[in-house]
Length: 104
Image (cartoon, rainbow, N blue to C red; front, side, top):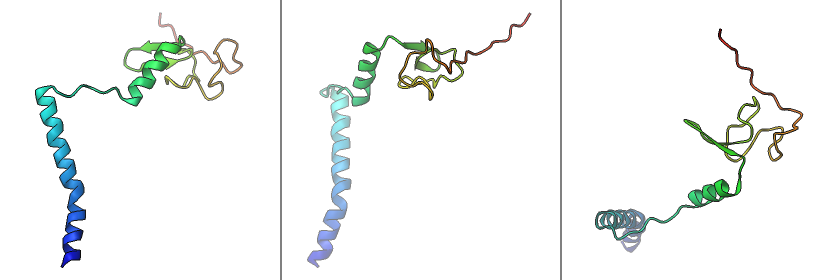
């Protein structure tokens, strides 16, 4: 009998703790006593944006690194491309600029 009660207690403990934390978070949000904590992703993104002058913001896509007119650009804030991920785009042997057709 004691084993069965112990199994129920151990099985229900995570659900009870989760419900208690959820109620506490809702109460803190309602009364404004919780201060927003910076996330690790937010801190790393701010550090990346502050240190790197090679980032460009493109509407609808976000921040991108490197020459955004290159076909091989990864369109990522962390990586330029697969052939030259860390180096500058100037003088890259694999630089392939996009060709835009002019409509007359």
